[in-house]
Each structure stands twice: as structure tokens, then as C-alpha cells.
Length: 59
Image (cartoon, rainbow, N blue to C red; front, side):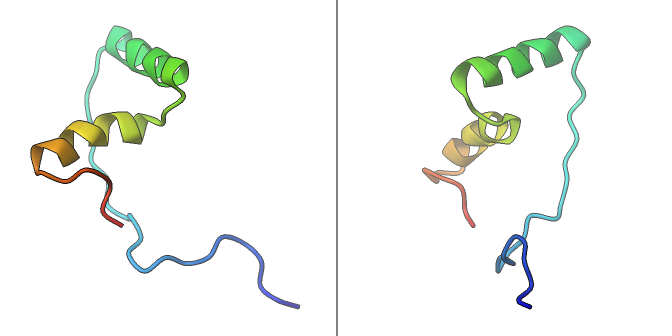
């Protein structure tokens, strides 16, 4: 039987960065994400990619 599951990608995102927020900031971030139907990662990465001159995520 064939192996099931998510296919492997060439450059997996294995590194993590943490961010410290107040409980109020966290709640506001999650509310914004839900309202705009975006992931937390997408919300936080967009300004980074704009800052370094890329228009979208690098895979």
C-alpha cells in the first residue's frame, strides 16, 4: 500500500522564532487573524518580506 500523508517539501520550515506579548496584545493579534481569515504566521511575516523587498513568502 502507498504511503499516505502530506508530501515532503524541498525546504521545510524547521526553525522557530519566539515573540513575547502581553495577554492583551495576544488577544488582539488572534482577533485580527480571525477577522481577516489569516494565519498568525502570515500576519507577522508580511512586514518582514516587505522590509527585505520580497512580495511573497520564499519557499
